[in-house]
Amino acid sequence: MDKKEFIARRVAQEFKDGDFVNLGIGIPTLVGNYIPEGIKVYLHSENGFTHIGPMLENENEIDPELINASDQHVSILPGGAFFDSGVSFGIIRGGHLAATVLGALQVDQEGNLANWKIPGKKTVGIGGGMDLVSGAKRVIIAMEHTSKGASKILKKCDIPLTGLNCVDLIVTEMAVIEVTESGLLLKEIAEDVTLEDVLATTEADLIISPDLKKISV
Amino acid sequence: MAKVVSIKEAAEMFKDNMTVMVSGFWGIGAPEKLLDALVETGVQGLTGISISTALVDRGIGKLVASRQLKKAIVSYIGRNTATMEQYEAGDIEVEFVPQGTLAERVRAGGFGLGGILTPTGVGTELEKGKQRLTIDGKDYLLELALKADVALIKAHKADRSGNLVYRKAARNTNPLMAAAARITIVQADEIVETGMIDPDMVMTPGIFVDYIVQG
Image 1 (tube, chains in turn red, cyan):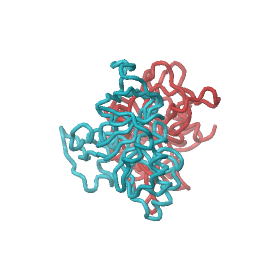
Image 2: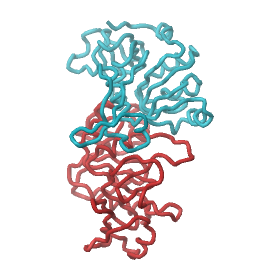
Image 3: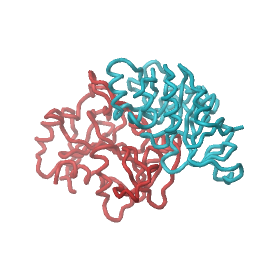
Image 4: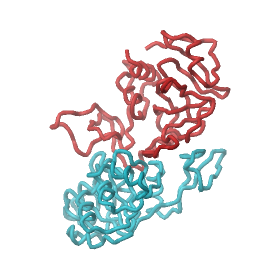
């Protein structure tokens, strides 16, 4: 199984039946493919609807006025509703989403998140990310543990922040880490890595759970 | 009272240096005919307000490609190569606004509010120059209302009184922008007689709409 699928499968275990969830671009989008059997999760699309359905490829089925936030032709499932941008972000900021899953450039041990801007590079924008992290009940980060060998889980983020103290859970191909009041709690590690591997590739301080488990997907 | 006009008549309302709100999400729900007419007038120095700068050939993106925007107030510019080039070269000013904040600033503009309080952006570089208020122990930023000279919006159906119905994901910022401009011009796929839309089904009441053009 490749890293991205592994991360997505683990994140997919975080939801309860009936949750409304917003999935960001990249690995987070894949999470929708691995929702466990018996659990129904309803996906929110920030451009203005709930109950995102499967992507459509057949020209005859495509409706030009129905895209997701990534400009892909999708469908809407029974039970869904369309609304304007004010309502869409009211849902986001108002705490009506059980969770949002986002990617990250950096996360730190205070739960700060950086995922929109790299100093020295012109930014492409913010989109709805800052709103999502300020309002969803749980913010789950789905990302690779390192970037070009460097830890993405730091003592302190050193690039512009998307949100302050907003991250609840970090899921990587190596570990599952919960952000707690006392710091980052390492709860699970992958089958094929050792605790030493995780500690050596994580710059942030980790509190090791007395109940440390292997990630099961 | 809303009035049905030709695209040509609508284009006569476009002036240099005006602020224009343009609906659409990646161009879906954007009034493409009105935008083409605006490009044709060649008016300059526009400030554009939209969710993103869309794509070079879609939505507000066309106004960037034609170099008519001096400033864009948007949440995102990636995917529009013209915006990226002009931004790199310093030819266009971009004010980045989180998408939900943008929607609320527009709503405030139309609904008589000076601004709104949002937790979005607290502790980030977007806080710079803004007032932070603490209410019941939680921090918010004061974000000011946005208004425009002209709002260019798109409906699926309009009656001659300006009552509007949108379709699917083409609604996005349309209902908010309709209220926030001095002149609101809607491009409708279909124009029907007054009374042909059930008042219970109206998504934007005609009171906000000044002119209607056939899409």
